[in-house]
Length: 168
Image (cartoon, rainbow, N blue to C red):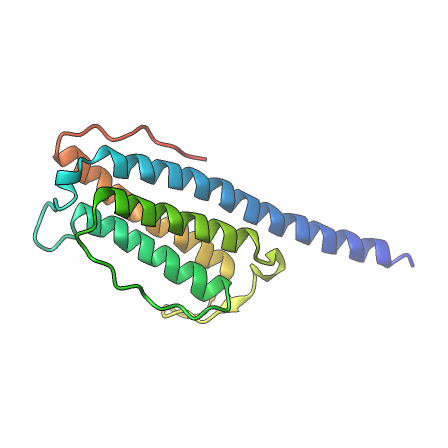
């Protein structure tokens, strides 16, 4: 009996830490969504086809790339669903692009919210080698941040003041 309390404390502390990880991710994820949607709305629709060089994606393509990555990582590593990349028209309207982006953010939020936090330390096969699900969460956010940074440059190159940063 004297060993049950320490075991319970270790188990409950571990669950609290894992729930805290999920809660922290979800809070940051919502703020990331808010910020990216502000960035997407700041660019006029006629500049969604803008790209600074030939080797770059257009502003709209960058947003769709972010969306595709969210769909892939969220579904492949946190659900049992088989991920199939959607074939999207690269010339969607601004409104259509933003709606798809918002839908993907919301879908990842629900997937992670409903995932078992005890599995965050579990390893999954990834093209860069085995990774924990926590690492996949970090990649989800890092990928959005990386491409959002590019989009901020696109705004600045068009002399459009980017929205103020939305952090934690």
